[in-house]
Structure formats: structure tokens, C-alpha cells
Image (cartoon, rainbow, N blue to C red; front, side, top):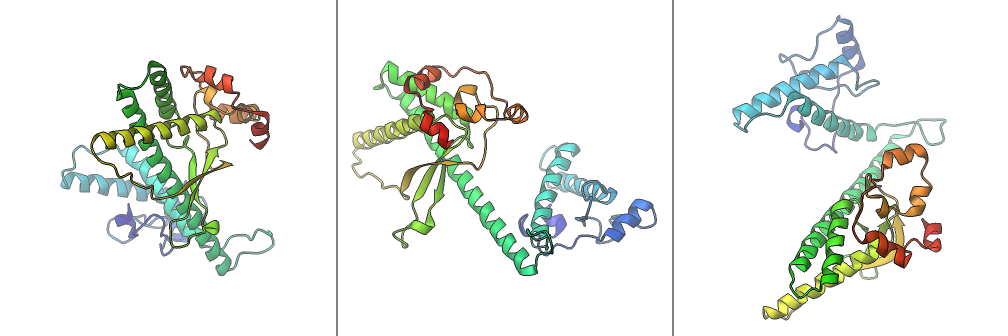
Length: 314
């Protein structure tokens, strides 16, 4: 897609030159040519009003699909993806490219009585890119955390020194990890403003997903400690006495994160107040599943993890 559009990155479409509304309208009315192979308009998109529904963009996408399939066959990449799958992927790329292209274009000012200046539009683009970059870093850390914990709990289940009771706990936590996936992990964000040691990496503040049952955080802490102890023991048995220091300091700040919501989790994993406060339409969107997570419900009820104080915060 980037090669056909002449761009280097989906997030850098600032300099992209889409076709004009006049060309698109002429093509739609039959009074002008379409995006043909013979000219440089073959893969040029329209980003104006109604861009999703224009016959021009549909024709451009068909041109792209045809070229992609031909290139894949020539490169002997194996059976090509179905055209409808390629089309869905291209629409997603086009949306990202258009968002980047339009980000620096002036919009109606938040006051509602004038257009933004170019400087204000440029600042908004920078803020958007910083926010997106932060979200990507957060998701990457969550993914790494999930992989680390999944590998760790499997090591604990293979450890013969674990008691039968502990083994049941790790089996339950493995089931929790599989259900929570990436977005169900706590987030880790850099508190760069309060970094006391500017020459060192800033501490990562751990925030709990607002939709998640609070007992899950305590269980994950138990898992992290158990995995760390197991690996220290394994190193000692192997004759390795040095304990590697963590590259980043992590601080559990007691705050909650409202960045995302994980849908279709087993109902017991959602914070009770979160579910109670959902409207009917939102509940239908979240779709909590009535699935049993063995031993979790009893444990959560015993410790009463969703305390009244926590419910007020949530």
C-alpha cells in the first residue's frame, strides 16, 4: 500500500496529494476519466467529503488489489489472500493514512467561531502523534508483561516443589491470563515529570484497568513474586549467583487507567460497579460472558476485593 501510494509510513501522509473533488465528480457523472493504468492517477485516492462512498476510491482500491495479487504471484509468495480480505486491509490502511493527512489540516476551532490557524493545526498533530506513540508503547509493555507472566506461570506448573493447593492457584491464574489477554493487563506509563534522576530511565507507574476486578491485581502480584523466586532458585541451582537488576523501576501508584476496555471477559472478572453503571446499550457492547473461572469467584468473594472505597474510585 505504501509503495502504491508513494508514502513511507502510514502516519506520515502530510505530503500526500489526493485527487480533487472536481476529478472525482467528473468520473462519477461519466464526463471525466477514471483512475487508469495509463496515467499517474491509477492509485491516487480521494480524501474529501464522502471519501468512503466514492466510485473513484472503489476503482482505485480495485486497481491496488489487482496489482498486489500480480506482485504476489510474481514473487511466488504462495496462494494470494482473497480479494475481499485484501480490500478490508486496504480500507484500514486508507483510514490511517487519511487521519494522518487530515491531522495537520485546519479544523473548526474548539470555540466554534473560526478555523484553526496552521500553527494550531500543527500543534494538534504533534499532540495526536505523542498520544498515539504513548498508546503504542503502553500496548507493547502490556504484551511483554502478558508473555512474561504466561511463561512464568507455566514454569510454576512444571515445578515439582509446588504444593497441590499452589498448583490449583497457578492453573486459575493461567486461565485468567488467557481470558484477560493484552488489554486486560495493568498499564505502565512513564512519569517523566517526576523523574528524580534525569540521567536514568523514568519510573513506570502501574495503573489498574478500571473495568477489572481488583483482586486480579493482587493475584498478579503473587504470580510475579513467585516467578521471581523460582527463577532465583533456578539460577542458584545452576551456580549462577548474580541476580539481574530490573532495567526500569515500577511503582504501583494505586490509580486506575481508563484508556481501553476489554470486551467479552468472563463476568466475574469485571468490577461489579463498572458493570452496574453500564447502560443497556453499553452492556450489550461489552457482552460479559457467563463463563466459570474455577476457584476465582470463591477467592474474590472471600477477600471482598471490590470494597466500597474502591467502588467510589471506580
